[in-house]
Figure (cartoon, rainbow, N blue to C red):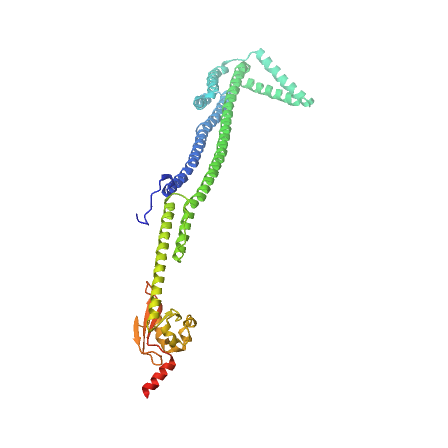
Length: 444
């Protein structure tokens, strides 16, 4: 199996894909309770508000309509009694019909008002029947006895007024009594004493109708208050529950934010740090797998890769050392001088044959730059060109002033082609004194 190929984790629940999917699903599911709670309370509040708009307000309007139309009927009734015009009586019947329609409508809006609505309809029917009796009142003739009763009523009214003026403690009750007597006198003067009983029945029926209409209005106001309180309760409950769900959501999100980096981001960082160390050449690294997911399998495979690279590096180092030993042995056995320079033109290797040219021991010459070795001064310019990459890969030439027959310079490069140093092979190296002696003998 290839080292870069990952094994599938045995435990499917430990896979990163599964964790990410579960995290996304959990994040989505966190929104569902919030939406459901908001939809539930919004629906309940909308239902209550709709009920308030459709039932309560309509019921309140019906209560006011009954009161208004009945007051119109009473006003038309009074005008009829004063002017004896049947048009007013027709207006009374029209107003009563509007009251009946509104009363029957109230039965469908609130079951608790069924009995009151029936009573209101009965009272309106009774009132309409009493109106028919009003047409016969003008034909009645008051007799002397009724006139005396009317005069007695006036006397009681005057007496109540005098007592109210004299008695300050009971003035309010006496004034109320006087007001009632005045109303009776006014009615008696309009319809005659014979219609007092009928007028009293009409008045009591009207009071009953007004009371029932006010009860409908009170019931509508009560329902409005109850539904408003319910809307406020639903609003408070919705805010409380939504805040609770939000707190739970925030807690779960914080848990996911803490959990996912520990299972995904931190292992990736450990792997990245290990690869960065390996890039710098430090192969003595090992990644500790925490989980058996894809990242854990990747860490195991990378540990195997690092172990394999260390093994290869050790073999390569041993092979290079072996080649270096062979090179040194070969260079020490030949008669030519062998010099190796690094990228900074410092001497890193010299064999024994090059000692006469160096003018010092190999141990003393190692690490010195070419400018610090007088015997190699003629090579300086060409060596710098070779190290700079300006010269060809290998050059052989005769350098005047150098105590040697010829010198071959070769550029040393790594696997990427970068210049790392230079190799100089010097043919027949000798000391300057020996070179001068040989030159003098040749001249002679």
